Length: 215
Image (tube, rainbow, N blue to C red; front, top):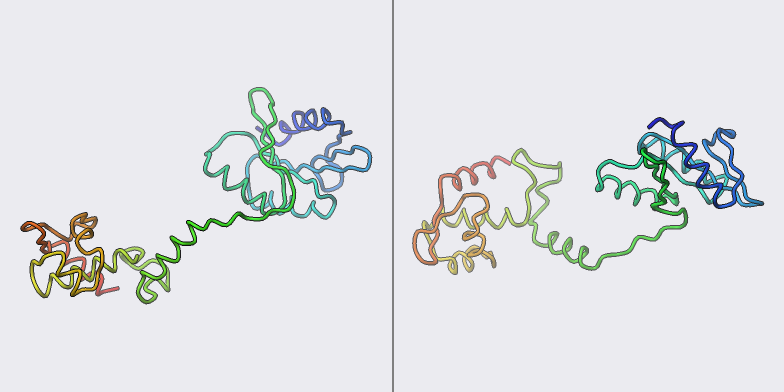
């Protein structure tokens, strides 16, 4: 859809709400007036930084500012853009190409992000588990170093020195509470079970230790 294709459905939508609507008024794409109430809609073929900038600028004219784009695209990207618009105080409309159906996904207004205690707890746990600051410059040449990977490296180092060992021993001596589970799950292909509850180091594990040492 072209930007001009968005205008007729948006105009009709606003007219049904009692607005007198005109296009290209000053710097605004669409302006609706209902008595002293003013509404502004900025049109684009897709979400862009320029569209958000335009919408934010129009907030100097009225609190009722929407950005409008054609319907469709990836649901995840749409959700992210709607959330961004809400944080900027903007409303969002989409226009369906086949029949001009206008859907309001968000209304303009003040936004207060809802805090997630669960996500905060998960982040703090990951922070406390990570030793040092291994990702200070971004991802290392072998990827992001996580607390889980650091624990796996500690298990691998222990096995490289002491040879195949029981999980309980690795847990106590290497001070990795989840040692047995880490070696049993073997996400990196570093460990192999050589006997009941006993794990050894694979060639991939030795290479992993060498790679980690290079970071």
